[in-house]
Amino acid sequence: MIVFIQNLDNLREKIKGIDHSIIELISQRVNVALQIGEYKKENNLPVRNYQVEKQVLERIEKYSEEFQLDRFFTKDLFKEIISQSVKVQISNRINTSSTSLKYNILVIGGEGEMGKWFVKFLRSSGHDVEISDPKIKTIKEGYKDLPDQLNNYDYMFVCVPLHKMRLVLSDLINRKSKAAIFEIASLKSSIIDLLVKAKQKGVNIYSIHPMFGPNVTDLSDRNLIVCTGHENDEMIFSEVEKFFKDTMVNIHSLHIKNHDKQMLYSLGLAHFINLLNGLILSNSNLDFDFLEKFAGTTFTKQIITTKEVFNENPSLYYNIQNINSYQNELFHQIRETTDKLITIINDKEESKFLDLMMKGSKYLEGDV
Image 1 (cartoon, one colour):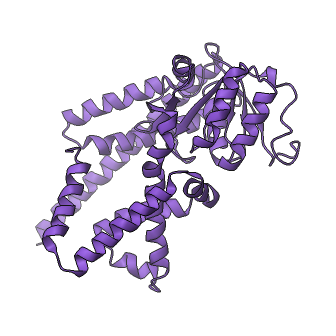
Image 2: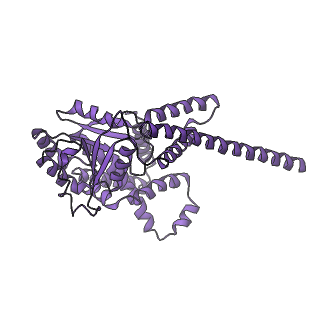
């Protein structure tokens, strides 16, 4: 027994030494990243180079196979290491600029959560970015008091709340903005007519939808929807690529008339299920810490997403449920499916329950 304990202690000492070596190597890597940051600063290069980051993660996948490690684990680990390298480079420089691709950009709604994300993203990519937002004291109530000299900008990113999007786009169209405009509304049906009007007046509005939230720092495996269905379809992809080509985001096209129907399920249903989960639990009169103490795997995984939903902007989530013109279709399906499932369970019809499970399984596996 004593020999076993001594061997265990020796092994733990080895792990202790390995841990020290890992931290030392990470420190060395961060220091090299700082040197790279200095070079970028001296040569007016942007902090982030998404193409290089993508190459690093691809290299890590190969190393993982070589050493028989889980590639998802190692990719997640190195995403954090890359993120830290970016942070130290940003903190080590005041201004970021790029000689190869630099635009004057106005972010309307730049003090909102997604607005802040775009401000940070665009600045870290080397662009000059200004902000227009009611939260800034120099901007009056609403968005009608946008800067007078709109023609000073090459691009505008409109990141305002859903219920303000139509107001802002109408203003920009009426003022015949020469700057190309990106709008990021989560729902598109209410502005389709404005996009047609903009085209008639020679105003270029590109409709995109980032399928990620403001806390995302790594774009790998994230999705960006580019809405098509207008005469400028070819142009929109070239414009989007100017900003996202070297990132690791997945760019998908979707006809704008199909967008809100797709979002009914991608956003509306996903949000609604998690809202139900959180509200039912809150009405259970059970202590949440007590519930977590006895949680199974499914509960633990589900509650992570539910917590994220309830920590998001409640007004945004309300608008996604309320503004989508297809929402009643979803509510009908929720009621119908719930009633059907409850009836099958109450009637103890196991075979029908198994059939439903099989149907869902086949669909989720793509076997339809």
